[in-house]
Structure formats: C-alpha cells, structure tokens
Length: 217
Image (cartoon, rainbow, N blue to C red):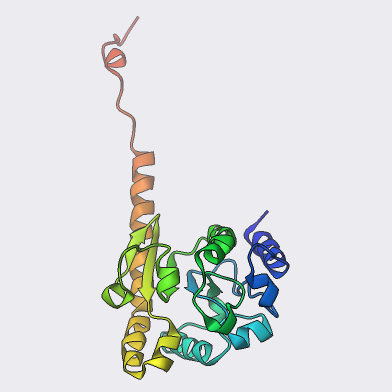
C-alpha cells in the first residue's frame, strides 16, 4: 500500500477501535488529518471536547492558537499532519493512562512510517515522552534532537498558553523557529545525499592481485 492508503486504513481502524476503555466514552475518534507528504508532523496529547464532537484534531481554542502560530511561521495548516498520542478523548480531559497510550501506539507508529516526515513536533509532555525520557518539558522545549533520522522538536502544548498566559510568548518563539529548522534539516539531507552519491561514484581500488598481473600474456 502507498502512504495515502495506509493513512486511510489507520483512519478506518481508529474510528471503530475498541482496544481500550476510551472507546466506551468517546463520541468520535480523532485519527488525525493532513497530507501524506507532509514535511512536519505534529503530535498532541489527546482530543478535547470540540475534537470529540467533530472527529478532527485541534479545532478548539488550542487549535485556533496552533493555526495562528503556523500561519505566523509561514505554513498553511493544510500542509502539515496533525494527530495525537491517543485518538479518543479521555473523560474530563484527564491525562491518558499508560494502557491507553499503549493501545494507540501502533496507530501512531504506522502514521509516522507512512508520512515519513523530516520533522516531528511534540506538543506536550505525553508526546514528548515518546522520544525524551526523564526530562521536564520546561527544560528542553524548543531544543531539537536528531532521533532515528528525524529532527524531533519538543514544544509546549498550545493549551498551555491558555492556562498559563506567561507561556504564550515562549511558545510563539519556539514556533517562529520552524522555518530555520526546516532549512537546517534540508541542508543536512542534501549534504548526506551528496556524500552518498560521492561514495557510490568513487572508483574501486584494484585488488593487489590485479595490480600484479603482467600487461601482456
């Protein structure tokens, strides 16, 4: 299957998933949205009330803020892929439980593999924990790290700015550097590709035996 087909299959499976108890309280599962060729993948934590009603990610107040920050950084929301670590709303917006994270992990793994983004932005501590362990988001936000051939950028969840207004400027500053990071990633990929091509085109050294062969038999 190609990337679009894989994403569609994941979407279909998520909508009828019963792997954990969140399926018993959801109204709509929220698989995620965006193009299969997206360069940037955003991973949030879980759907809220508005997402549970619509079946779409980040459509509430936090989603509006996310869209504004993407626009300020020069990106259309339709050009990025947005999803969450859990695809159904935890009751009362509580934190997702370990078994719920585990139940959804396979879906997220398949989405990442299909899209193959050059940058993954984690929004909040639960998505951050997929790549960074035993750290606080306040310590590493906005500090990207290369992991498995991708640049992973941990950021605060946009909702944090709504609950803690002093964080708004920090979050906006982190997002404003997205064009810089995309540029750096592309530079690295181009250098890696050139280096690989140079290695492939380098003539092979003759073996010691071939060097010793006489010119005429």
